[in-house]
Length: 433
Image (cartoon, rainbow, N blue to C red; front, side, top):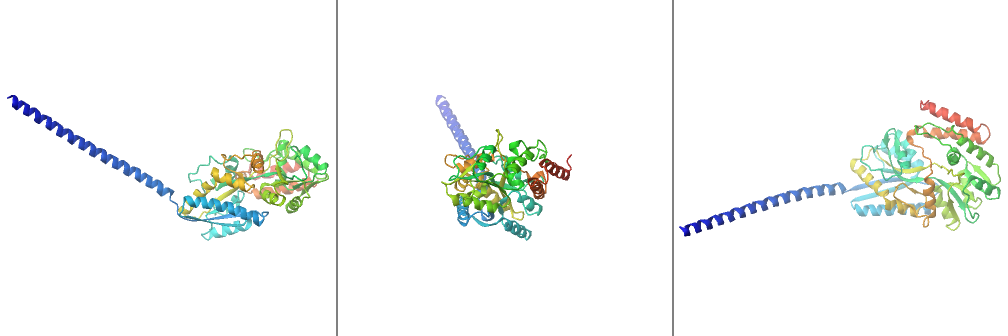
């Protein structure tokens, strides 16, 4: 009996061990299956990610060139863009990027023609104001439905790619005005309008392009502005523009102060050393620096007055997307646009060619290393923007404003009357009270 009990106990223990072994095998099998499923899911997700990031195809970009740039400056710009292309295609080796450069008027006309035929480049690099022409021609792709993170863009630039409730452009760079000067003639550039006028009276020649847009920068100094938040013209309020026009009228007859509508003549006079100062667009700077050299060419902030800074117009260069490009081409274009505006690319291009102001808010410029670029970035902080949504006929608006400007400067109309007339005509067109 004792022996039988021992044998029975041994059998129970062996059976228990067998069941535990089976449970362990089943558990291991279940874990293996779970792991395989998990790995398969993870691999599938990674494959989806890889598939999303796998870019193929040819991307065509047309870029506007500046009429003042010499062949060597244009070559340098092409070289900089080429280096960006190489870096991008190193990341996406199945992508080919073709870039063509052409004058602005030719670019717009040819782009409209090509798109209407179902062709054309995937991207166009041009000024934001051309969105009005191209948008009304129906050749641009609306980016509103694409998931784009615009938080890194300066708000001044982003506001200028909206038109009729749609997003038609990708901001690239900003341009504005500054005070260019000849270091061989000037020791200390002026910081106020009073100092500028005194220097002109003392023999330091000053040149300024004479039209509404090019001279608007002084309006803010006297407390004036062009638009209110609702998009109405408020040039007639607070007499800011009127006071600035009175200053210009009084100053234009001073010795050595030249107000002229002939921009090329003023540019030539500055390059030849006949002007100590010129109010310059940032796109002119590469040509000026090349002609005068780093030791002779300088850039300063536009003069203000009594803690009121100058407010030059702030104009963005933007990438515009072809309406007839297919889905793959559009994705390529969006990826390349995002690459062009990342911190590294913006910093490199701005450092090598001081005509651009970075649109990426994370790009900060060390003025000790890049004094010209630092001045431009600082000047842009007080710049004035003209959102496209303000009105649909912005070119007509500026043409009419310039007519009134010339009449005021010639003494044929008071500045107050001109401002009132401009506001009434424009706000009436908007059906605003």
